[in-house]
Length: 328
Image (cartoon, rainbow, N blue to C red):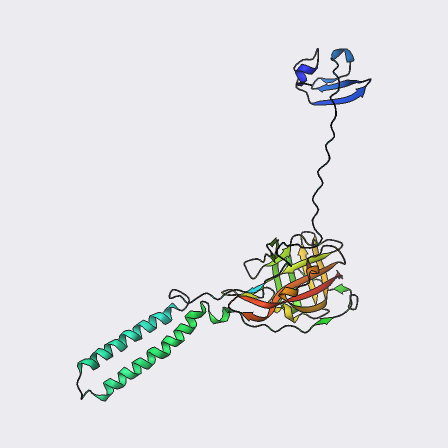
């Protein structure tokens, strides 16, 4: 026991660089390696009894579950919608509020002039007051509707028709995809006009986190990697979002069996071919989409169906499944 300087006899304070212990006849034979070389003469050392060895069980390495788990129930994917912000005078329709204020002041002036008049007030004055009142009512209602949206009309989510269920057995298509040029870490569906960068996301609570930017797609971190030999690689992208408009996966509902999909990663581009297109209520999303075991496949998920502005969510998920194919 003790420090190296206390355990050895006849050694200089040379810095030790390695010590090897071996049991021999109930004692410990020591080989000392220093900057001057290796010393093996037993007379150079004082022998000490070996310490009692106590075995400590190895700490098991935590395993990653094959499927996503959540203490709050099944994992959901919310990839679209968002709540419409409340009306605000400083919002996108501020100019309507300004126009409304100008017309209101003009009407107030006409009312004051009419109040100072007499029974013989010219008819054109009364007509002007009526016109001003109608203008205030019309413009005010219009301005309220636009400002009440909290976002330009083109950037408000709307209902999205769900695709008809379609599927074909894997291998029913041409097993070679035409080449395509992509930047690193991108997903592309050329026939649908989809091309978007990919980031890695995780599950928080009972939802898969989706990138805040609707033009970026998230890959489930605990799922199968892009180059994995088995399991499911899950990509989820927004269909749209309030204030941002259509997302990267807005056209995804147009996918059909046989559609080519490409995913680029650090190890190159992989090719895929759609085998099925399905729609599920969000509460019934198959948890197998998070599975990193089983057959090799790519799953693309977005939202669709009816949009509820009170919750800011769509009712359904659109799930597109694809099988790997070779690139030409």
